[in-house]
Image (tube, rainbow, N blue to C red; front, side, top):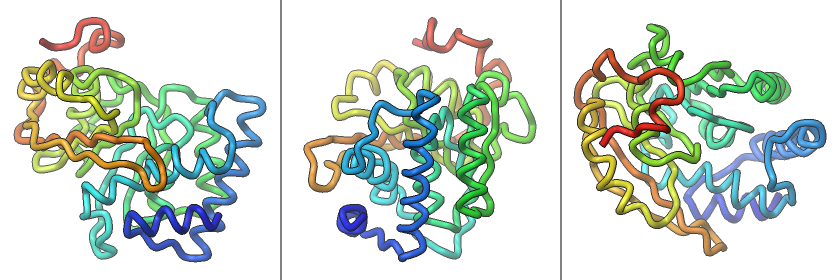
Length: 240
């Protein structure tokens, strides 16, 4: 795990001995559970460190508020899968109040077992689809920040994510390097959903050639009640 310490340090994230131990346990549980459930195609330690752990923590470079230990920031990780980026963020920044949401109950049970094993507080794993959960008053427009590494175009992701973000909050999807065309195509959707595109921040993950683009969208007004539309519609018929 020395590689994790070194790479995190390049992101100006200092990890304690206890935090490193938590990452070790998380990795072990991920690999063990992956034998019976499809959580990730990436299993080799070095790759998991770079492509899952460090990739998740890279958010700190574009959303520095999470570094403030005195700030209680509510974060939704939508379509979290095996817990990325939410769980690494929670381990590194304990001040965050994180909700991990996924549509597959088996994954949610795995996430809850990790949360219990690491004895993490102010974090929950929730079973739910974005289209339904965003209509629940407990989640709609309740979060300071919504993040997602889910694979979907920006227009679709905006329809899934922005309904959860409170006015003044931000939606920051993790995207690949070439994002300009997607941003142009999603302009109308972002505006309709109550958001405003602020900027794209790009970085290369430490000691790798992996480029990451963070699209920063701020919530300016309430999302109309019609959104998100019924299950599957946002991906089949993105707002144009």
